[in-house]
Length: 102
Image (cartoon, rainbow, N blue to C red; front, top):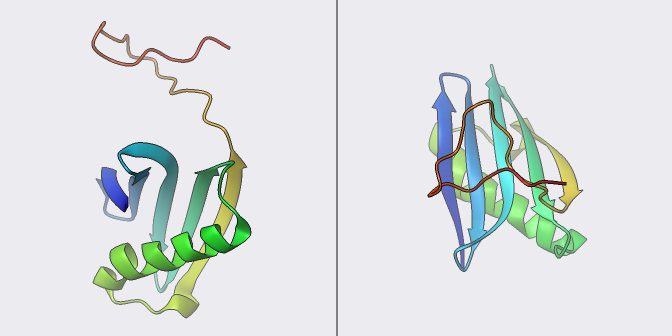
C-alpha cells in the first residue's frame, strides 16, 4: 500500500518520500507558483508508465486536492532510476544512514 511521508514544507513547496509497503520507492517535490503547481517525481526503475500515471493521479488526489487546485494546474516532470544515496554537509551518527560510497 502506498503512503506519502512529508519531509519538508515551506510556504511555496513541499517534499514527500513515497513508500510502498514501508519501502521507499521515490520522491515527490512540489512547488506552488500562483495558480500553477510544478512538481518533480523521482521513482524507482520498477515502475511502468501506467503505474507512474496511477501514482501521479494518487498524488494529485491525496496531496494536492487539499489546496484546491484542479488537475489542469499540475505539471509533473518524471525521472526514473535508482537511488544512489543521500548526501549532506552534516556528519552522520552511527544510527543514521551514511551516504552511499560510489
